[in-house]
Length: 213
Image (cartoon, rainbow, N blue to C red; front, top):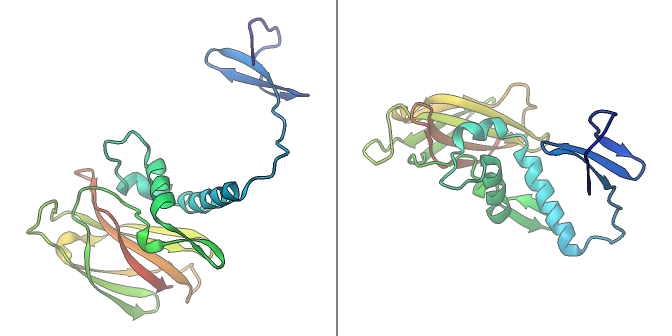
């Protein structure tokens, strides 16, 4: 790579022939275009690429959700990178049809609030569900104004649905409906949890299991 110190044409960026021009805060640089590798990826490399593709396909739809409820620890890694690391290490399995996510191990929120303790999930029909939980208000890291959130995932599309406020911890029960624009009868995956925007705190999400729209 070479640095361009004098240039009468202005700032340069892009490719010309076999050269690549790059801009940076330190000036313009030119380098040879890298040649495409002729080596076929190994089995381990193909598996890793498939794992990464599955992971990124899932993550790209949850950015607007995790910015609220996936609270990083002392780690300097971003929410996105922490979730990616969690999925790759804990939430993937090989099946006869290839790789798949272990949805019960997917953690869509993270924080120190006490998680939602599920008592009952009832299918009320027509895409409506009722959920009862133990508020645990006599335990540490619980607040009366902790909000109940819901995340629904439609793998057929794939699409996410985010409901940030279905009720409060004190209610001990909530109701929710699957999106009307989604076809009825499709399998969905559901997670709930608590977050408190005033205190900037959240709980680890609770997986409700597979439901139908």
